[in-house]
Length: 353
Image 1 (cartoon, rainbow, N blue to C red):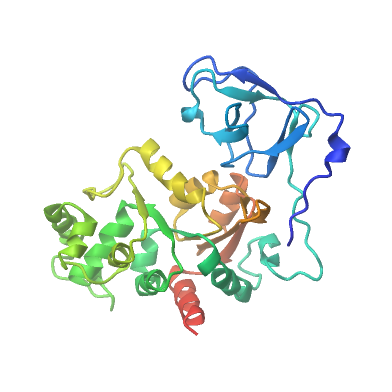
Image 2: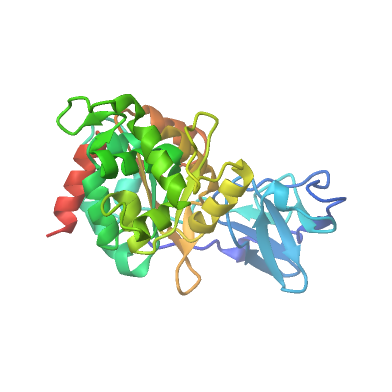
C-alpha cells in the first residue's frame, strides 16, 4: 500500500504550533503534547514538517539550529528544549496526527495481511510473511524480539539458521534466552530437559553452570571466540557480528555479564534498533513484545523520505498477546496464533528454498 500524505491545502488556515521551553531537565512545560505512533506533522512557520524518531508517548522538540523536529522520551528532555504545546491533534493547533496514510487498494495485495484482526480461526497469510522477509533482507532492517519459549520449543536451530542466512539485523530479548541457548550449546538441555524430553543428569543446575562458564570468560563474545561455544543463537550472533540487547529483569539468574540490568539503559539500547526497524518479528514473549511495541512507530522512512508501513508480526500460542499489544497502541501488529517451533521451522523451510 502506498502512502498518501495529507492535503495540506485543507490545513492552510491552521496556526503554527506553539513551542515552550522546558523549565528544567526531564520536566515538561504545561500543556505539552504526547505523541502517538502515527506520522505526526507539525506546522513551523508556514511549513508542515514530519518529526524525526517517531514513537508513542514521546514529546516533540524543535531544534532551531538544525531546523528540525525530534521526538524525545521524557527522560531525554533538557532545560530550555522547545517543546510542542497543543491540546488538539487535528491540525488546528499546528499538530496533525495522520492515521489515514495507508488506504488499502483492491489491486494491491502487498501487505494486506496487516489489516486482519488476530484469531485462531482465521487463516494466516504465510505467503505475505515470507515475501516480507525476502523484501527486507537486502533493503531493510529486520529486528527479532524473542522469548525463552523459542529456545525450549526447539525453535533454536531455525533461529540460528535465520541469523546465519542474513534474516536478522538485531535481536532483542532478555537474560533467559541467552542463558538457555548457551545451556543447550554446552549441555544439550534447556532448563535441564534434553531435546527428547528426558531430564539431564543434574539438570536443575545446568543453566547456572552455563552462566558460570560465561562469567569465566567475561562475556558471551569472548566465550564464543574461545571456541567454548560453537553453535546456537548467541554463537551465530557473535560470529555474524549482529547486535543484540539482553534486557534484565528482577527474576534473572546470574545475570550474564552481557545483560543490561539498568532498565533505562536497556531501553535506550533497544531504541537504537527499533528506530531503524523496517520489519519486526516478535516470538513467544509478552514482556518484551509489549515493551518493544511501545517504542515502535507505525512506519519508517524509505530512502526517499516517504513513510512506509512498519511490518510488525507477533507470534504466540494465544490471541491474548496481540490483543494486549493493540490495546497498548501497537495497532499495526499482525498476529500469528501458533507455537514458536512450528512458525520458526515453517519460516526456515520457505526461506531456504
